[in-house]
Amino acid sequence: MFPGSVKMNKLFFIFCLGFFVASFALASASVGVGISPTKVVYQIEAGSDKQFDLTVFNSGDTPLEVSLTVDGTISEFTDVSNERIVIQPEPTPHALPIKNGKSLSVTFSPRGSLKSGTYTGTISATGSPGEGSQFGGSVAVATQVEIIIVPAASFLSRIPSVYLYGMIGLLAVIVIIYTLHRMGFTINVARAKKE
Image 1 (cartoon, rainbow, N blue to C red):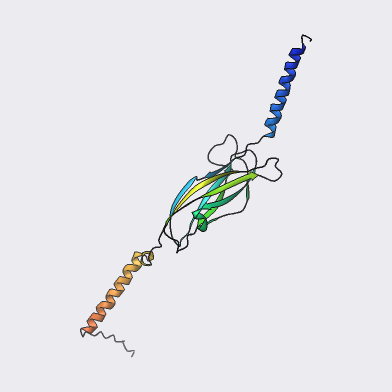
Image 2: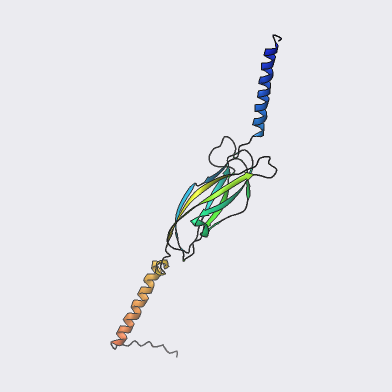
């Protein structure tokens, strides 16, 4: 063996290892999706609606196609925008406030006959690399949701108190006039004659 060949073999090995690591680093990508808020709790009256916005953002380094899905007992009265949207990655280093995130609308509409109680579930944002990407797979994150359904309020609770007091006052005047009429009092209203 030649005295310089061992040194040359080590250099060749280090060069090959460096090339392999560099080519692997160039072929990898970071994929991630985030959602805000991560948990929501609402009390909703049966028969009414509640809307809020979820912010979905891309914490990776390639654009993602994102869609929302609903799971759990909330799914029967929850409506989400089902469109797939493309979200660009957040600038690095990641910092708040979110710059490239998208707001997606969620509406809870429990029907009036829905039983009172607590309904739970998740709203998931699932992202996958866009078309033309050499990477496959998907990532997902979810918001935990707790909805407390209370019975619909009575008809009287929906009437503003000013109108309610006015109706009570009018009813009292009618009762007083009726009582006075029963006691023999009469009220004559005469119209003035024109001459």
